[in-house]
Image 1 (cartoon, rainbow, N blue to C red):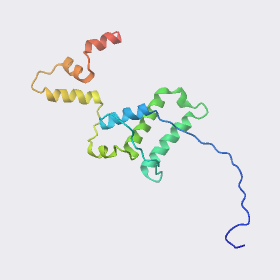
Image 2: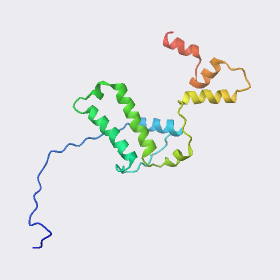
Image 3: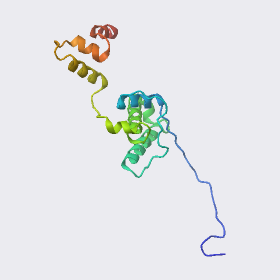
Image 4: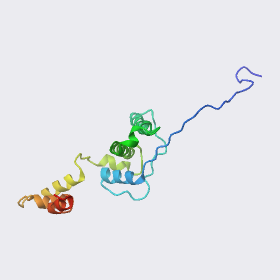
Length: 157
């Protein structure tokens, strides 16, 4: 016998809880299309490990933990679908922006605009037609893909 190793080891079972948080792949694909403005074709090749010692890893872990705690034991997130949707989309956004993947190199090359896609389409349309008189209906059609009157009719207005 040496002084370094014990003669015996006792292993006892302890209560353990394991939470699993699954993200819908459709949400990830939507975020990729929104952030990178390119459709997601094939796999993302996500890094299998998140380093929780980095700021990005801690942010991701904190948001995941917030969602899990909010759902546990019939928690408040289960009665708040809008809050749940927003937190889920934020988590998907963090996956796309912070976890290394096959398309990460596109994040470095892209200038991230804060305007929604329909606003950018309207701006692009106005730039392309700068010499033409500006008409609301034409800009609306370029942004939303339909006439303003169609939207009013559909909404009952």
